[in-house]
Amino acid sequence: MTKQKHILLLLMLALVVLNAPASETTRYKPLEFVNPGNRRLLQSDAGNFYFYRSLPEKSMSLTVNGMESLQIRTVSTEQVRKPRVIVIVNRQRTTYDLKQSAKSGKLYVYEPIDIAITGRPEKIEILCYDSQFYFRVFERIVPKSRPQRLPNLQVLEHGGIMLLSHNSHSSEYYSFEPGQTLRFNVNNKRTAVLYVRARLTDRSIPVFDLYRNNELVERVELSTARTGKYNVAGITHLTIGRKIELPEQDGSAQYTLRPVSEHLFIARPVILRD
Image (tube, rainbow, N blue to C red; front, top):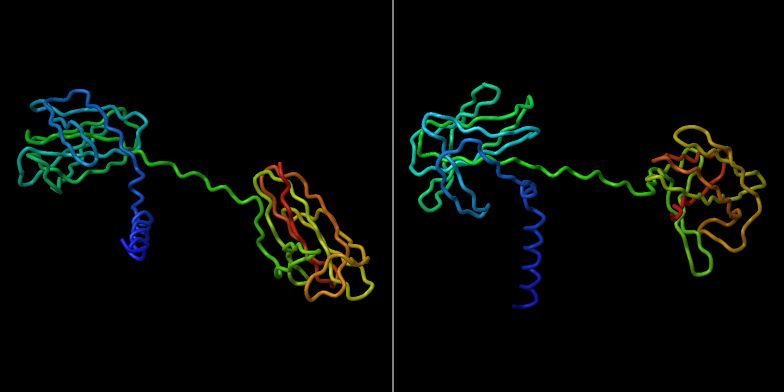
């Protein structure tokens, strides 16, 4: 196999996996009838299961306590002109038409019937007047989706990203200025610190307000002392840094930095290690 064909095969396999239907993650648990009659074995790709028919002139029942969704599968030994099955829940009858979908050996296979269980019945009954039909009921178990874990830090709003450099190292900072806030979330009960600097254009003091969940935490003033070790491209005079410890989180909290003075600020929130 050439290298190009090998790559093409891998891409095709990846597409098959990505496009696999979500229903493949659904599991089915076979249930047992309380009073079954004769049985027939169906061997298929979905598994090998016995299917049952009822005793003459009787229905088959099964316990469904706490179940929410069932699937009824059907096979027959002969073709029937208008096949039907009756499902009885709380003495209420519902008739379903059966549609043949395949044949396996001497058995005719029909499309499954999905039924949602409401009203918390203790049992249901399966009734079919044609003795050629055999049934098996499965509990349909859909995996519960796991809640997505939020990232520890979510930056929601800023004026742009600037690189603060020191020797051969650089760090990303988020800018904010009058008319543009910096807003971010700290999630998952994590703690964080905030490093802030400002651009100096005169002797005025850089001031901004720090909010937590829309409530003012403190008004922060930065020093007008200039740094000689750190620099940002496009900024001539940069203040020394100010470190602010953010409160511990019970869950998640949203922080907003809102300028008070006419300065350009840069800030970097950092999640602390446990």
